[in-house]
Length: 82
Length: 279
Image 1 (cartoon, chains in turn green, blue):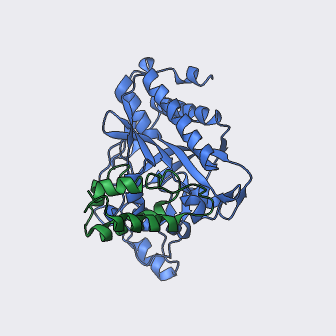
Image 2 (cartoon, rainbow over the protein chains, first blue to last red):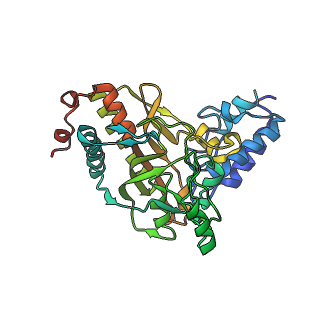
Image 3 (spheres, rainbow over the protein chains, first blue to last red):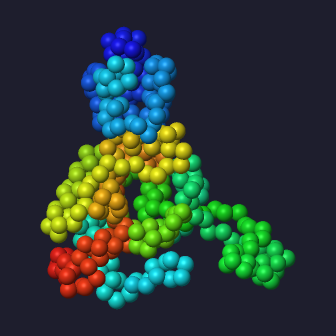
């Protein structure tokens, strides 16, 4: 799957926007740090993990995850959809 | 220092004095942040631990204080024949269990703040006995009953992160000064069914937990950022939002092991910690 796949990015953007709270007073872009900016917490991360599996039709081995793989929409696309 | 027949550690003499001085060093560091010393019970509410999903995450480590059901017949049966030839308890009916032996020092801090609104960020320090089931026990290095000194920061996100960064610098300076082979390494906790646990996944992808790893193999402490998870779980707020929290944890027995391993058994060769803390 290509990182330019609009459906994947659109789905990720929609999910991230749905997680943003009023106090997240930032412009959300594909480079926004999802965890660093406090947009997602451990409560959300499993949901994001499952969304990526669903969008990619893939099964991710959580033990193989590396720091920063879920850092931003760009990093997610580079890691799982290129 | 001696080891019992069932592999537990007894501290005395110079080894105990070193352990006490190490703890004074940690509290000295904590005092730089104005930390308030507190003391908590060793028993933690099962109900509160369940809110943290502790039993889902660490069922293999939980240790419970089991008591007997109080019926006289049940107690008589136990008293008449309490222990097998192999030294195991022959439990009869047990009473409902409402407590767990504290698995970590800092959990009771957040639990005690449940439902409160903090006016500002606060820092506390505490030393607690901790209890975790282990498959194998190695004196000082891996014990089912060990001692943890923690410094806990609770409040505004930026202040918690500054606290953790400053404390990291303090411990790294200490390791460098005494040439202790300790590296700060990104780490995860030993979750049960780890790949399906959201907290494990979070620790894998975010730099939330860093362990102080001695000589490439032994975690003698850790620096942890919990984001706002304890604030949301226990409804603790500060300045209009759920609190963020972080803690720095020191395993006293493991620090003692590292010092004895690095500097030897002769106390004349040990760093003068008393001078270091100004006493």
